[in-house]
Length: 282
Ligand SMILES: NC(=O)c1ccc[n+]([C@@H]2O[C@H](COP(=O)([O-])OP(=O)(O)OC[C@H]3O[C@@H](n4cnc5c(N)ncnc54)[C@H](OP(=O)(O)O)[C@@H]3O)[C@@H](O)[C@H]2O)c1
Image 1 (cartoon, rainbow, N blue to C red):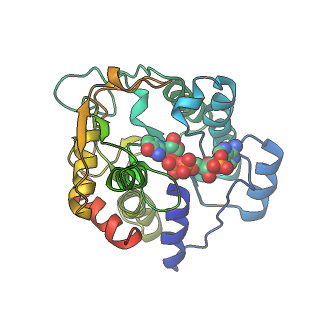
Image 2 (image 1 turned 60 degrees about the vertical axis):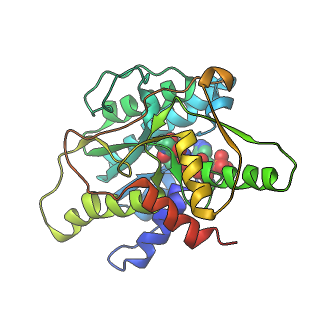
């Protein structure tokens, strides 16, 4: 999802020469990385590759760590060797979600409660062990074109309710986070991190940043907004995490706030309306 959005956005900006990779470049293959770094000699590397199946990670721990921890370490080592700056993406799932009230700041103590979160945290550490010219951007609850996400899933399931295949939809109401549109995230990264280097403006200090759409909601409230906007009269029931058992535990509080900078990203509900209008007509 995020990688294809960056590719789309950066290719429209003629200040950049963009080399985009899919699965064809395996970030756990050091030799393959070497060949591409030698060919491209990048100034910046944006690493959006990850093992993102949170539930499956519980039973495929080794693979999750290989892709989310070892891979970013390899990419960071190559960036250092070739003098490239690295922008890497991490997650709200590095926190346990027990913080009361506010969201998590960059410096808050992390303590993941599932394998995916553990592997992503190890990825952050692997990068910091290799180099210092990096930005690690923690984000949350992504939606956008190019991959299955919560918005698409709700529309599919909501359609089944409307066609009578299902009675109603039960959606978790005790996990809170900030849904984030890949377009808004990519645009903020371009504006906040990449362009200052190109234009010679003041640059943000290297390190970890939290970046999401603004505002927060539960999954239930997120679903309600999607159906409201689409005019779908779907019977929706709020349930607790305990009533919706999944392989991986999820943090109750997934809200990320930044103690470093306000990127001024619009509200998640405005962004979801735009996504629905632009990509999911009908
Ligand atoms: N999605 C979210 O809600 C969310 C929330 C917080 C943070 N993030 C982080 O944001 C970033 C982007 O997430 P996303 O949702 O855009 O992920 P995504 O849609 O799942 O994309 C990840 C891509 O990485 C590829 N990949 C997997 N293993 C690879 C490897 N060894 N070498 C190269 N590519 C590999 C995947 O290919 P295959 O599909 O073929 O495996 C997939 O195309 C990730 O770092 C993720 O951890 C995501």
